[in-house]
Image (cartoon, rainbow, N blue to C red):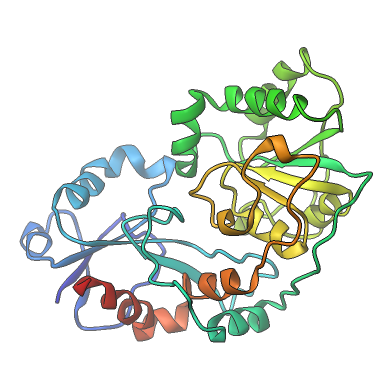
Length: 307
């Protein structure tokens, strides 16, 4: 079974060191047309225009394809033990097939040890603020956000408006490290119609490698938060692990199974959502680079080809 990655489409994501995995240039149409399975990295904004024909070809081929993305768990990233997500069709939780239902705990235990992750008890800070975790404008993960709200700034406005229907607590925004000016402008436009809105300045340690979600600056924001709100930010997995009631606003979020979903519950969130099986399942969504080289995620996902 021939698995083909097209140069540019996979970028820096590693491929298994197996004979049936090949990386070819777009000009090698003979190999591309003979592929049984394709593998592609998640579409990134900067690459979309020049690589649109390649991505479109894969989707139109009618053949199975694997999508790779950065790790789910990004706390304490270890550069010598980097992980990548692997799934059929998508990396969105509600669209992808990770073949991870009812997974055993072994992979989660490995990740927890590799990255020194501690799962904290659930807590509810009665005097805390509502922390809204923003994502990079125009990022591919915001496809559903734009379909629902039309524009990035409209999402911010609508989210504030909905929260204000149920509480007058401080709403604090945590910016993604990229395109911060656009995020600030959107918040400033909304401030004219709402009060008690702030922007966190705890961004001195923001890391692009962490997706803007990790490090001491996030912890400072979390320490004062009552609940956390986000669309499908990867940081929501961290807030759940931190034990803070979390509101995921779209089923594409990897934190969706252990989140609150409706802002009408912002003052009375469900706090005791069980996380154990969710963590076990997420352990089978991502694979360390040495495991990828051995082909472990391929063998894991290949089971689904016969379903």
